[in-house]
Image (tube, rainbow, N blue to C red; front, side):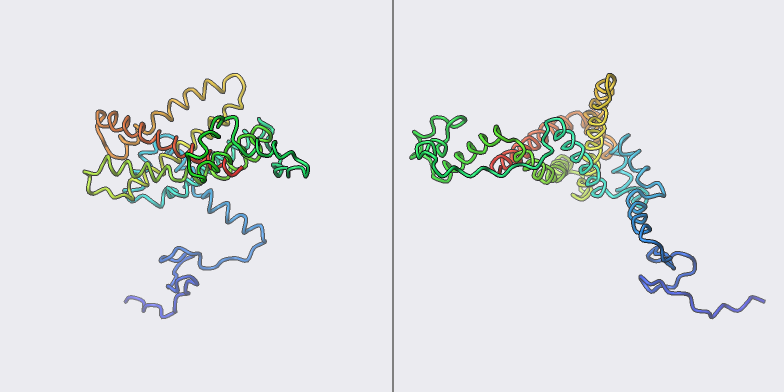
Length: 301
């Protein structure tokens, strides 16, 4: 004779109100009872969620550094709980790289101090000297003759760029601060552009959506930032650092081609042809983004 089913009500999850049979909710995954801990427990939760004690981040980084295309393929095939999401991983690796890059540059060039505010002109400054400073000499020498032939806003912009270039020579810290603020945000457009180029190259694969191409692009850029961060770290190692960096940079340069092979299952002829076209177009795009970022940084400094 079978025992009668228990009529005892199951405890409810405080998050989704579902009945919980064990320590964790089977619907949303939240723990049934959250123990009250010291404040340090909140910090511990952040570390656990970020680094994922169950090995998610370590597993993701291992596959990312070895074969980012396979990581994208695994994520798109549905194995998403095992790996860190692409955008989160991209932000993590890019922030880590730019932090290390600007830290090394500021220490190398002694730019760590806060930039000084532009000096106010002296009360008795000679009018002719003020005029000479307002007109763009140096980089824009000879523009005065064409002042009437160009729009006022264009001439004023060039004059400001020239004054900013003088300021750069006098105190580069303000320009460095502008670059540090603008370059990372501007390069956020790079993965979007790369995903768009992948969409065009693989437009005949109707089953692949733009989302899929963005996942591939984000994982590839996360890998490139991770390689560059390792290059910065190895550059601090005397004697053997440059040897390791040579191999690492060669491996990083090969990865965009390997990603096409791993994520799209393209044959080698297609990988070489499409990879060469993609790198040429993408290289020009990144160059334009960096130039625009530096130009804006100079204009605002």
